[in-house]
Amino acid sequence: MSRGQRHSGLAELAQKLGIEVVEVVDESALSQAITRVVQDPPDRLIVCGGDGTVQALITGLADLNDEDRPEMLVLGGGRTNYTARDLGTHGRPERLLSRVSDPTSRWQQSVRHSLILRQKGQPDRHGFFAAGASLDDVIRDCHHYRKRPGPSFSRWLRNGHASSAWRVGQLGLGRLVGRYSFPKHPMTMSARGLGTLSGDLRLVLMTTLEHSGHPVNPYAQRGEGALRLTGTRADAARFWLRLPRLLCGRYHRAMTQEQGYLSGRCSRATFKGLDSVCLDGQEHDYDPQLELEVIAGPTFRFFHP
Image 1 (spheres, one colour):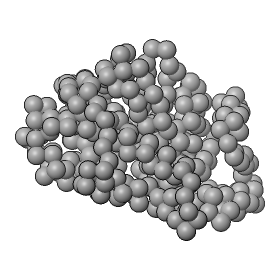
Image 2: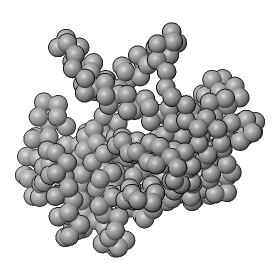
Image 3: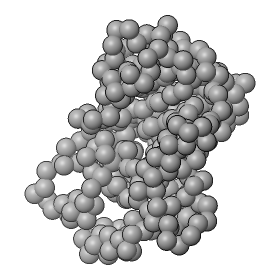
Image 4: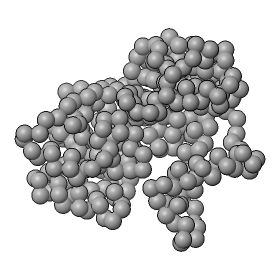
């Protein structure tokens, strides 16, 4: 939304359409805006921002009764916009915003559960996508890369829309030549109805999004529950050969816990040894000596074309 003052144009359009607008420029302003919405929830709420903004909003709305939570339209305004992509509302925010005020425009409604990260001594955190182990390392490295100063001619590669992809490419090449390395992540991951995976884990993924029709959907079609997860050990058998299958959710029968793979649907998962995650792109640290519980949370209603 920072490109070419796009947020200002979107705000002006919303005001012309008679939609009340609250612009936030930092975490304090966002917190105040969320408090206002929670205290007096509207029937419909439109949010344009990245996944972190959506994550903060649903955490605030989670304590409301189901009937009091507003129906939401999520417009993509960040770099990744996983939630908006899952709902098909990540592109052309101006066009979608214009449709809201059109009484003849038809909308569909979808329901998504949040996922809750819960550990003793920390507040519950709600989100839709969480990454741990080496994926968490890569995401945090990308965050730090964008914050580091650099020459002006490379600013667009460091801070622009393609900065994350550029940095991931650098890390990949660096790993090939032995320049970059990430720490090991010994832990135990247990998923109700699916089993347990222990050892040095390479990938940890959790979501309540469906990714229907998306080319990347790295979850096996087995188990029951709103929570979807995938974990792989660093020594998973034939990992690189099976990675294409994993990324599109086409798990082979040989991709078992004994082979270093655990994936599918469940209602609850627990971790022992997990010390950090990125939840919707936001960094959170946990005590690896305590159990971290991940469960499917309350439902949120979204409207979309």
